[in-house]
Image (cartoon, rainbow, N blue to C red):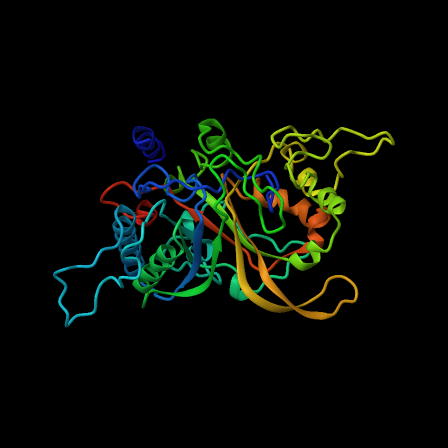
Length: 409
């Protein structure tokens, strides 16, 4: 089965905040295919808007779960194929199948990505749907790291879906339509919308902290690197070969506190120049970090605890992840300051909807962040408030639904 699945695929086809680790956020304008070796929304150029949502399954019947995945796949095919249109022959006495919320809007670059959490396979020691034996070894429980302030209501989930597109209303419509199909089978657990700036094609965009965000990410068109670091191969079960593992973590950033820091300290913390994005002491954004460089006093030019240094592949045995993050802003919230005078204040509930893909989270995100959580200079400005890991299976072929071979005996 393993070799047969890989043959079929052949026939049809790093850092956490990422200062230097994602491609341009200027998304493509054409339609994204639903069917293929890989699901859309992984190697797809990052769009301008996204909406992530996790679900907890409430049914105890495997057939209900399978039907939901079929319905989700059919709806995704429909929405990704063409923009929403009104049905001219609709019966006015019946509830419309579609809301009409995205009629007249472009579905350009729309991608929809589905994932399975560890608790779908086993929860509280119970093999819920006879899937426990098919749980991949790589689908582990993400540890709680130093500094985490995880909110249970923003952590975990049995199922996940993420819709991304250039138009925010299209994204919201897609998620609502898919969520409605889950009624009676699963309930919404937590969700987070996100956005990117509309930067020019080929230009590295800036994040909310004002720095270029995405210089050294894995080039998604490099087949060898993607196979090495991102796509699951023969080491995984057949239903995951050609898929990947997604870690997602909402990270609140103390933007007001950051904006009060002088430029030199900001650049030392990141390890790059704010204006050019170049490594400290260099001129061009794409130049190598040069972490062994020292100044006249023998001190490292780039602080060894800076974000760029701590997260660099050369300091992590070549470890790389495919970072695909968005900014978020949920309005305002009350928090306790982490610096003098340690008061409670009302500030922006804004930051990074961090997500990354890798072949194995144990040798990807978990390996990277175990060190970063302890000594990254950026930690004084960031708080991880949620966490989840999902197995994102390979893409579907026409007539099949997402994850079908997981549920077949």
